Structures are given as C-alpha cells and as structure tokens.
Image (cartoon, rainbow, N blue to C red; front, side, top):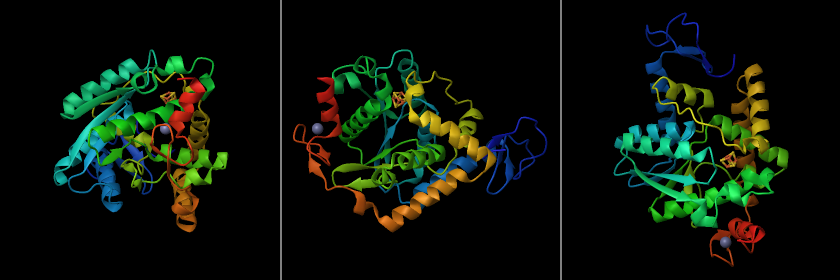
Length: 312
Ligand code: SF4
Ligand code: ZN
C-alpha cells in the first residue's frame, strides 16, 4: 500500500483511540480515525510553519485560493491556526484564468469557502492582466497552456497580494507537488529552478512565498477534507492533458506505491543539493524589466516577453 491509504474494510481500531480507522499512515505505520486524522494534518502544517518560521506576528497572509482541494485545505487549516498568531490576518486571492467549463465552478467553491471561514476575498482575472481570457490566448498554442498560465498566474497573484498589503503569499503545494517539481526540474536539467523553489523564497523585491502543506502527502489532504464533508468535487482543467506534470505525477505515485518514502527521499536530495550549492550561487542578479519595471533576471520579465509573443 502507498503512503496514506484509505481504509475501506472498517476492521481494527484507530491507533490513538477506540474509533474505527479511516486511513492508514506510514512512517510510522498507524491507523487513524477521522478526528485523529484531522488533528494530525493540522498539527503537521502547524509544525512546518513553526519549524521553518513561515509566519511572524502581524503577518498579512495572502492565500492563493483556486477552490480546488489543496487550496481549500490550506485556507481551512490557516483559518483554524490563525487565532494562535499575534495580530496576523488572512486574505484569500482567486485568479480567474478564463477557462470555460472549469473555472466557473471552482470560483463558486472559493466564494462559498471564504464565506464559511469569514475570510476577506479578492478575485483577479487574466482578462484584466493580459487583455484576454486564457482560452483565447491559447488558440493555436494549447500545448503551452501550463507555462503561459503559470507565468500569468504568478504575476496576477503577486500583483493582487501587493495591492492587498500582504506580507506573505501562501500556496497549497503538498508533498506530491513538491516531489513532482524536483523530478521535473531534474528532467529539464534546470538546477537553478530546482534550488529556487523553497519555502519563504524571498528577496527585497518579492513577497515571500510559503507552503505550509509541503510535508503532507496529497492523499492525506484529500482524506482530511473528505472526512469533514469539505472535499470539492470539481471538474479537471481541460489543459491538464498537455502538462508534463501529469505524466510525472502518475509515474511518481506508481513508484511511491511500490516504494513508500520515495517522495520524501526526493525532497531530502533537494535539500542536500540546496545546502551544498547554495541558492544564491545559481540565481542570476535581479534587474528591472525595461517595459514594466518589475523585478526580473533579463531585459524583459516573463510576462512582458509573453505579451510580446502574443502581440498584446
Ligand atoms: Fe493552468 Fe495548466 Fe493548471 Fe490548467 S492545468 S489551471 S492550464 S496550470
Ligand atoms: Zn515586465
């Protein structure tokens, strides 16, 4: 069985109490009931935040809320942890890329969740940022969907976070996402990006990004929402099939099934490389984009380069 298998047979008891288990966790091997699974997931996120110093007093945290399962879990967990942090606040930011038949439902789910958790909510769109919806920007270049989408989404998120006065941007990346990124950057031979994507990655020009769920496997996050009746059953983005990530994802979870601990091993390798090489050693000096003035490493930032190639 893989990490975090869901228990369907109902046999046995939770390792912590007499209730029936809903999931089996590895490292260490144990069975957990719904209440202990919820406590475990929230404690693990709290520990990641504590140990890596991700939240400071008076932080205003912009939560990237797509409405999908990871960002839903992130907002639920952060809003429960919030009272423990001195004078910190949350603002949820949803980016509407303009993907027909997909985004409408996730935006509705995001609105519903912010209402339930009492979180301030801001929506920004690609139409405002790039002059058109993603579907229109991609005509004839569908295979590049995720890189175009990623560049514009990062820009939209940081612009909205700046405007909202945020001091941190929190994203819902889980352990599976992080391990997939390590593998993808390795496959692309992109060592600079491999060591650039850590928690609280920051410079004077950027709002630091934090990933409180980075130590939690995807299955546990799904189960955490499921047992609370909060799992968002939503359509998948129609461009997913073009993504290299989709292939890496299924390959890696197949290996993890056979060889539990593979994803954690990948993350450990990345940390060793990061320590040995040093993040600064590989990063290019920051300059200002000559078109928009945003920080970037070349003459033009990625968004302005993209706009030029799209003729926008
Ligand atoms: Fe954007 Fe690709 Fe994700 Fe769809 S799958 S939302 S195109 S990054
Ligand atoms: Zn620019």
